Image 1: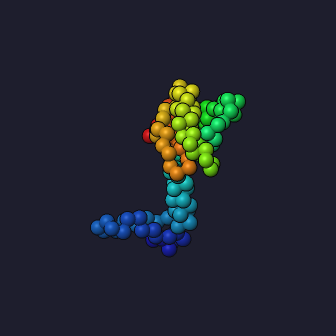
Image 2: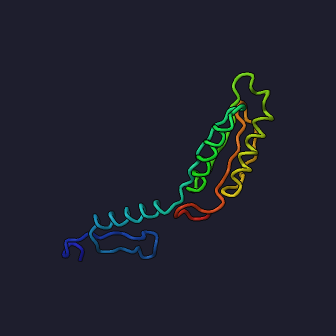
Image 3: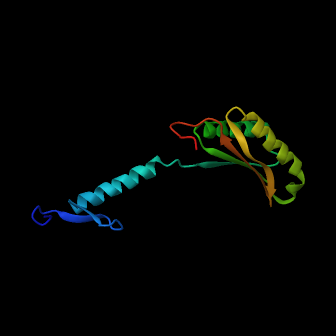
Length: 141
């Protein structure tokens, strides 16, 4: 029948008993499957993580500048990974770094919540913030 219509016989589910086949244009069938896969992929939520770096002695103006960037990132629906990088002997200011990160989280509490409290990993003290509300067109998971 497929040869008479100049179409292809496509096996839809080979594991069924009896196997299910369909008479269709094979190229069109492949195109539609590819289109479905692309649509499913585009609907997936992509998690973006933005990083903001501080030094242990970051100035007030620089802190506010980076705070504004973090507000923009959180309102766009991205996670923010803030970290204090200690160079050389500045590791003795661990407490200053932790205070700065906690102050950063406190300033951003209306836009995001702390996912991971400040934690020292080698020469870095990191903290992760996630957005409270969903951003533009993002789905809550």
